[in-house]
Amino acid sequence: MIAGFRSEFRKFFSTRMWWVMLLIAVAYVGGTAAIMAFLFDFTIDSSPELDTISLEGFIDLSQTIYSLGATFGYVFPVLVGALSVTGEYRHQTVTPTFLADPNRVRVLVTKLLAAIPLGLLYGVVTIGGTVALGGGVLALLDRPTGLTETSTWLYLGRSVLALTVWALVGIGLGALLKNQVAAIIVAIVFTQFLEPMLRVIPAMTGRPLEFLNYLPGAVSDSIVGKSMFMGMNVSLTEDAGQVDQLAGYSLLSPGLAVAVLAGYALVFAIAGYFTTWRKDVS
Image (cartoon, rainbow, N blue to C red):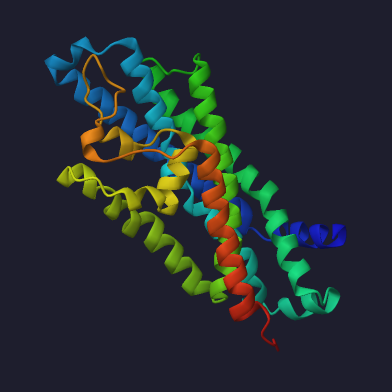
């Protein structure tokens, strides 16, 4: 299996895809965090009734900004994981891979395990970019960054953990779909459009839809413990940071959330093994 790890890392780092994707991830989530920091500052300055926001309220807002790295950035470890599998079929390297190790279960398990350090890499760099750009804007605007708070670093650590697990989901998705274009389309459409649209329903209607809390992105937010979607239910008042439970948004425990998200990866991988991974390749 050690040889398999070496092979996976060699394949991954031998192309420009890994660092190009990493730069795009930092620009995307970091830019989003910077824009949200400007918007928060503008909203507070233009609303006299918000002058009473406490320091705790500002810290909560800064933590919500940092959580954007996990809320929107998880598409990148998903794509990295999926491409590491579908790229084998697209570039026809899957045949020598299976010839080198005919045990396809072991090959798939090796890919899942190799995705952990890759997901960790993307998690650390992506969240670091969110903090650098989002926190940098807050500092320039003379707003509390929250970086001196232990709770902020706890959220950041959980964000990195969430993105790491998402790389496993990407491996499972790639094994299930096999087609690279299909995997990219499904990952982007679901994570950036479909699920976000579903998750704003409770905030818009005031009706709790508990099943939405088990969608992959919502589960990821439960690992972090904070997200923009939860922030939709927070009033920018002296009590900022208190979740409006009438909006129907709730979080799973972090441990359960990790298990559920890892369960998605496992289900996808098992389904992919029995539907595509065992088939003959040319």
